[in-house]
Image (cartoon, rainbow over all chains, first blue to last red; front, side):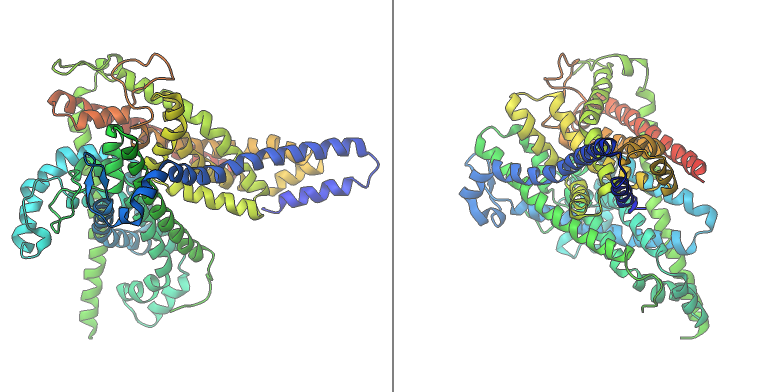
Length: 332
Length: 280
C-alpha cells in the first residue's frame, strides 16, 4: 500500500505525454504544494525534538560551565550556598526504577504468558483490556492513592513485615516513615506493568506456532514448552519491552514526587526518603529564586532527557528487530 | 526427572502465571474501589458549579478546574492536531524516504520524552517571553505531547485505507493530492478521530508539564494569558495539602478526572469496533 504514492506519480507523468499540458501543470502544482505542506508539518516533529535538546542545553549553559562533569558526581545540593550536584537524584532515579523493574518484570512476563499461552480465548480480551486500563489512570491519581492508601500500609504493614523478615540486610533497616524510595518503586511497578505486559504479549504472539508444536511433539509439558521454546524465541523483544518500561519509570514524575519523600540524600535503606531527577524538578522549579538555580534544574532535565532518549532508542531497536525479524525459521 | 515431577513443576509454573495476572489486577481493583468509595460522597452539584473555598471553609467545588482542563485541551488541540494529522498524512503517503524515517524516529523518541521535560521546554519558550504563567503555555506543552501520538495513529489509520479506493479515484483522473484529501482522509476519518481521542485522554491527566506553565488558579481565569486551573494540578495541590476537606475534594476530583478519561477511551473502543466492522 505504501507504493500508492509512487504509482500516482507515475500516473501523472504518464498523462504528461498527452497534449493537455495546461491542466497537467496545474495538477502537478497542487500535488507539489500538498506534499510540501505535509512535509513541512512532518518536519515540525523533527524540529520539536531538536528544539527541546537545544533549548534545554541553551538554558543550562551557565550551570554546565560552572559545575562541569562534577555536577554528575557530587551529592551536594545546597540552594542557599549555590552548590549543586545531581548524584543524589540520579541515584534516586536509578534505584527507584531498578526496584520497580524487579517487581514489574516477573509479574508482567507471567501475565503475558498467561494471556498468550494459558488463558482460554474468551478470557484474553477482557484481561488484556483490564491490564491496559492501568495505563489510562493518570499519574496524579496513582500519587493520590499512594499518599492516602499505600503510604499508611507501608508504615504499618508492609514495612514492618519486611524489616522483621529481611531486616538483616542494610536495605531494610532504619526508620520507616511510609514515604520512601521503596514506596515509589511499588507505584512505579504498577504503572510500568501495563506497558511491559502488552509489548511482551505482542512479542509472544509473534512466536511461530511451529516452535510450540515442535516442543510439544517432543513430549514437553506446557511449562517446558514455554520455557524452552517460547520465551527464548521472544527474548530480544522481551528485553525491548523491559527497556520501554524502564523509560517510563525513569521519566515518571507526579506519582513519584507524591510518595518518595523528597530528600536530596543517598541512603542504603530502601525505607529512606529520596528524590529523583523528575521529582526534584517538579518540586523546586517554581521555588527557584535565582537564575543559577533555574539553570541547574534545567540541567537536571537535560540529563533526564538524555537518559530516557537513550533507553527509548534501545527499546525501539530491540522491539523493532523482533517485529521485522524472521518469523518462519526455527531458532533455539 | 520423572514424569510426575515434571507434571508437578508444570502445574506450579502455570499457577504462578495465573497468580501474576491476579497480582497485576489487584492494584486496579484497589485503586478503583478507593476512588469510588472516597470520591463519590463529595461529587455533588456544588462540585461542578462552585469555585474552591478558602482554607478553613468546607464545601466549594472545582468548576474552574473542570473548565480549565477543557480549555487547555482545546488549546493543545489547536497546536497538536494540525501538526500531528498532517505529519501522519506525510508519513503514510510520502514517508518511505529518508525524511519519513527521520520523522517516524523523532515521533517515537518524542513520545518517550518525560512530560516534565516538555514542561521546561514550554516554560522557556512561552512563559519566559510572556513573563507570566499562562493557559497558552500549558496548552502548548500539552499540544507537544499530543503530536507524536496523533501522527503515528493517523499514519496507521491512513495506511489501512484499501488501495483500490485510491486507484479508483486516480483512474478517474482525480489528482493525487485531491485523492488523498477527498477519498483517503475521508475514509480514514473514524480512525484519525480515534487517535485524536486517545491523545486527548492521555493529555487530560497530565500534571507535570502544567506545574510551571499553566500553574493553577483558585479562581476563574480572566484571560488565556494568565494562570489557569486544571483538574490534575488541583488534585495534586489538594492531595499534598494538610487539610482534610481538601483531601476529600482531591478524591472527588480524581474520580471526575478518571471518569472523563475512561469515557473518552471507552468510546474510542466502541468507535473502532464499529469501524472495523464497516471496513470488512
